[in-house]
Image 1 (spheres, rainbow, N blue to C red):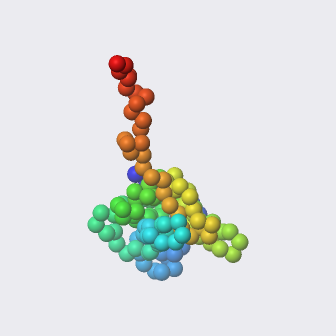
Image 2: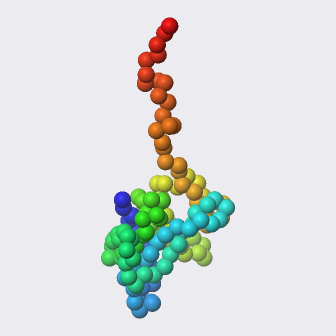
Image 3: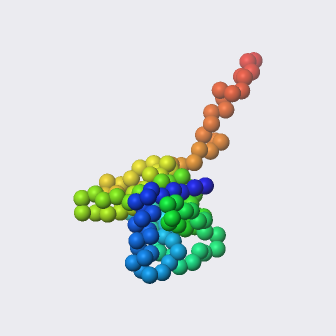
Length: 127
């Protein structure tokens, strides 16, 4: 499992920690909200909580709890300016679609063995 930051995202995290005057990382998670189902959460962290995963890129660190990591695994995080808005932008391979407002998203359903058509793999008996 992994998550990575662009240099811009790492710079923004370091900038926010410096501005605050303390902290070790940006804690990223997910919560159920919005018209599509999930949204990202952000919090400056002073300590690593039990069970959290830690990822470092370009001198900045992010912390993610195991439940959120299932959804965020493989994400590449950038910090972008779009018009007057600045935000963290996720390139997440697990996202199925996002709402029109960009505030929420949902994820692909994991494939299960039940979704595999077993009839094509087994020879059929004739009577």
